[in-house]
Amino acid sequence: MGTTRTIFLSTLAMAFMVLMAGGAWAVCKKKTAGYFKQMGVATAVQTAVGATTKTSRRIRGIERSLTGRPGDPENGKRIVLNRKKGNCLACHKISALNTYLFHGEVGPKLDGVGKRYPESILRQLIVDSRVYYPKTLMPPFYVNSKELNDVAKKYHNTTILTAQEVEDVVAYMKTL
Amino acid sequence: MMRQVIRFMTRRSQQFIKQARGQSRLKAPFWGNNIQTTQGTSVLLEKHIKKRKKHMASWEKVLGGKGLEKMGNHGKAASPGKFAGLVLGALAVSIISFGYVSVTDAQTIRRTLKPADKRNPLPEIVSGYYFANAETRALQDDDFDNPGFLWIEAGEQLWKKKDGKAGKSCASCHKRAKDSMKGVATRYPVYYKPWGKMINLVQRINECRTKKMKAKRWKYESNEMLSLSAYVAHQSRGMPLNVAVDGPEKPFFEKGKAYYYTRRGQFNIACNQCHEGHYGNKLRADLLSQGHANGFPAYRLAWQKLGSLHRRFQVCSSLTRARVLPKGSDTYVNLELYIKWRGNGLPIEVPAVRR
Image (cartoon, rainbow over all chains, first blue to last red; front, top):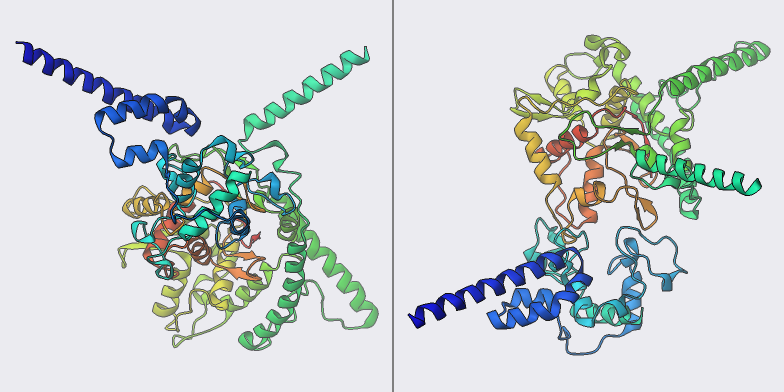
């Protein structure tokens, strides 16, 4: 009798935890900022349940540097401006780069982005922002084109930015 | 008293702004103030003038010198005498220009339309014309300045030109294009029974050439094809796009729609993400349009040339680093059908001028 009750209770608890995690995820899907409010709860639940790599990635981003070396913000700025590399100004406004004309309006402003998000989230946003915003039109800058649909032959088996370039851009974002 | 007046006026103006915004999702200063006299554009214009001269020289070969005197020199009549020539010329200029002006005046293009079809995902339909710079719009407005008319006039010559083993021209069956081709471009692409799939205007012209005229087919992006297809489409200028999608076209329509909404390329972007979600926003210096097809074949300043809709598709594909398909491929024709359906109701503007 006692054993069945404990099993029943534990399954209930598990279900509750899963629901909580799901709820937190639903809230966070809308805005990453909202995500952080729930992050404490969510991580606690996830560690209790046994987090999958995918969900933990959603919450914490990519904590480790892709190359193990720190990024160079100056080179990062160059990549941000380069139309064939980052081309960030096509969609985002960066007030620090006001000397360059015509900033895009498609994405959010990047002013103060380094203070809004921790480094790990910034890295994840650049590598593949679909993790946070499934409907985003931001290109996944560090996803092998093998995993993407209908890519031109010229770009087969490549990424838009190299690992070090991603690190450089992250370093530049932290200065904003 | 003054305070009250000022308060009233500010309130009133705010109301106006709200009203304006209520009608359109686009930002308030969008229509009037997007004049960008950038250096880039003026350089493009200078290039265009040079290219226009070259272009006229190249046409001399194709048409054997016929009709070239008219090209680009509207209204300059041959002068029998010095004085009489001047008078006649002035008269001709005034008459022809009056005619053109009245045409453009009559051709009222409304800014936004509500889609007639409930399935259309767009809340409002706006022609690409309103997303262009004031400079570019001015080029399109004036038929004398509009460089697309070089191709239209060449197309008029090609319409009459006999070609192929059958010894026929377009005119020998279809007579006057003004009557027979009126409204044709609003329907295309249509379902073509012999092929069992969709056919667009360019392919239809080539079908006519090979089957009826026994002539060689023209390449999709050749000057001849651009001219004739633009000339045919021009006959429907001002008429609303009206593409049918519910008959045998349905499976092709669905394919086009699937293409439109699928992410592709290394940038992993689908058409709808820019042209449905972000029209009216700037992508660097360009305003994102709704991506309608009512102006094609259109003169693009970036190309310095008239170009087909499929060429424009290829540009979009390569910008997202996606696989570029050949012009006239089934996928692009299906996409053309879907895009034209999205713009159903928009007046045809061929030859439109775009950046």
